[in-house]
Amino acid sequence: MTTSVSESDFALIATASVDEAIKLRDRIKEDLGIDLLLERNPECKGGGCAVKIDVYVDRENESSLKAYFEKKQNEALADPAAYDPSKEHARCPACGTEFSTRLTECPDCGLGFGAG
Ligand SMILES: [Zn+2]
Image 1 (tube, rainbow, N blue to C red):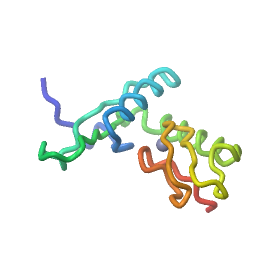
Image 2: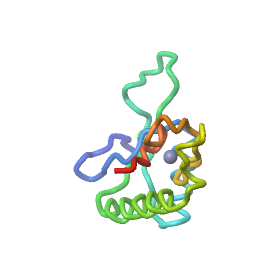
Image 3: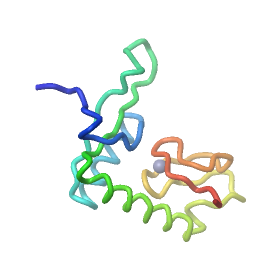
Image 4: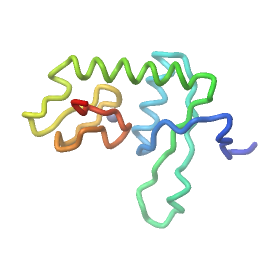
């Protein structure tokens, strides 16, 4: 069984910690019924760095997933509780990560909160 990901068959959608990647995969499975592919980020070759996981979706489901993220992003923008720049921290509505509002995108899943 091979673990190599063919870029013609799969699109990289996020790079996340192991926990976040699993959470994301479970949520996408639950919400969309799509199986995401998780693979250890090749940049980390086991040299003491935190393991990062590349999250892939097959090309067939790429557009559904992008639409899903866009919808989540619109919900985030519509919901001031999710991202309030006057507060110090925001919680990503897509993956639940808390991050500083000095950032305009989620450091874990890359969901953007920029005003445009
Ligand atoms: Zn996120």
